[in-house]
Image 1 (cartoon, one colour):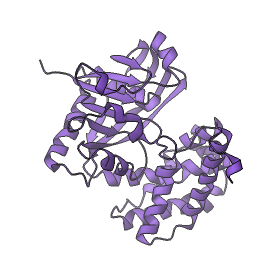
Image 2: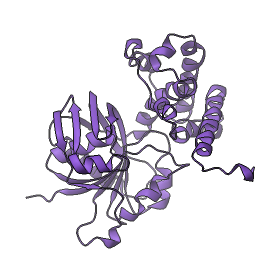
Image 3: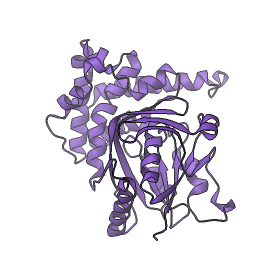
Length: 335
């Protein structure tokens, strides 16, 4: 019998919990999940999951529930083969490399980033040069509606591929990505595809994440409400066009109809609330650096003029500063 892969999954919100469920359901992996705010209730009663792919599950548990990332120097058993990161990506607050470092085994652990944004791999390639790093771009509608309660309303679609510019054999990277795809899809209930051009997939998702996401957060209107105003044509679509220009300059020409497709995928009647808007509503940190800041910095590097994205990024920086101040991370006496 083939030995199961040992997987540590960090971040069990909606996306992370469904990922853990998919990875364990195929019987090719043992999944240990690191929980934070929902640890107590899930440790007591398991997850309650309402899924369009898996049905309704009450009391579902991964192989192990943890309240912190384990330190492998204190472990007597096998090391983790994969560490899957599904946390919100806020490098200005909690760099993911610092979070997972105690569990990373050099030359062994494969790091999988199922997170949004651009250039998210670069700090990890520098921090863990001996470890392979895979990109995961998720297309799913899954949310934790209450602590320990997950709703998945849209079928899971996950793109997996190796990040470029790693000091590893390209064929080994390809086989490692394909092995993860095999584990993820083994139960036959979901779709996970090997996509070698991870840059294309990340730029394509930024058409939404660098525009509708921050605009909704800044004005506190969901995507349906935005489409009821002139802002969709005077601000959002021009911002999307700026993302298109930067992507093309970076070597990724996106299809002509992607802007219309992105807007159509957010029907007015659905009143979809983007993640960044949810974060501002609950006064949490936003993912502006990798979703917007890196697009702006790439534009600067490539000489592309992006006045709208520049303004949106500056406003998001101010929002993040306000949140840090309100959480006591900024001492006004030092200003």
